[in-house]
Image (cartoon, rainbow, N blue to C red; front, side, top):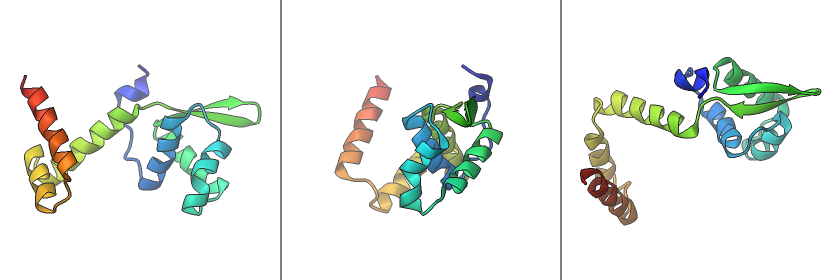
Length: 129
């Protein structure tokens, strides 16, 4: 495990997260290849992607390795670690560090489907064993 994955990077913006999803899915990857995946859908240019990649490098979320006249980008943080940290921040910030009120809120807002509830019940049952 690299040093960067052991420390929590600075917060990643929504736009940076879109780039991270591409890098987690396929790496190493060039800026042009990232742009191929996100630019059309988001109305971004290659310059925008390069700016976001530069920010992610400075936040130690990704590494940039030179290859000729371009760079290859790879994640320094695992997607599961990032999601875990963001989930914890959400629960801490909005629900006082307790997950139960989060589930109650989702249930009250009818944001949980029957499939979601069945999956949660199965997870709870597994955790109790």
